Length: 309
Image (cartoon, rainbow, N blue to C red; front, side):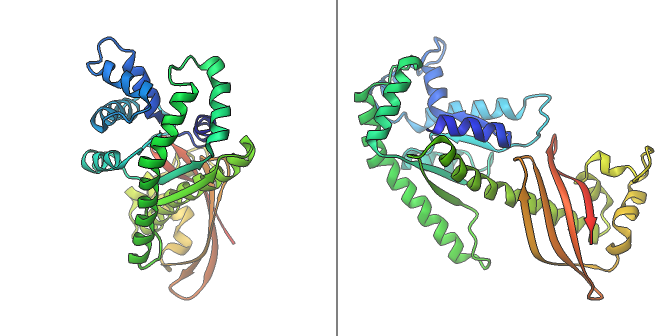
């Protein structure tokens, strides 16, 4: 189920998992939450909670995580579980959230009602949730079919239209349908492939920005995208100036390098580590195979090593 896969996504990619359902259930039990009774009634009846309430609780949770001190993974991906559920959710998100977030896409787990009922009744033995019963489950499934499925189809159409209108043939939005009837491992294989595709775009963007800094001789941007260990000259424990390190790693080819990159490959190692390899063509026509190792740290993706062949 979504909960099991979400836990794996968090452990592997260090995402921030926010379940709209959990936030609503928590809000429904808070005595000082002014909309507790309305939320509780919607949950028991299998109805969708008004979007302004869902987004209000979601934004509070996102702000708290974004401002959390001491995070070793910096700006992270937010995994919003159970959203959007209808067009009202989409409209509310478009009205209130674009200035706070950038949407990568959506993971859609497809599973027939018979399998869902069996799983829910098994979960009900220990969950203590008021909506873990067959009546609520069937109402939620019917709500999904009438209100959520049309939203999924609309998002898929948006992805197609974006791709058609983009010269690269790619869309910023990626909707991935996953068969949720398999074993945990089978479902995870599909989930991991989808998450790797999302993360790959982030890494390629960081790599492109680093190359632009190198070719432009921008030492500030170069240093901002390099891990502190890379800013120590190889074989030395003494920290050199950024200019010296730049010359040490990039000097031999930076003067003659152009932005011509081809045959790029990205290998995601464990969600927060990756290798980016590509052919880099210099202005004099020489082709160099370059590999950069990246890790996700407190300030985002950082280059930790570079090799050339």
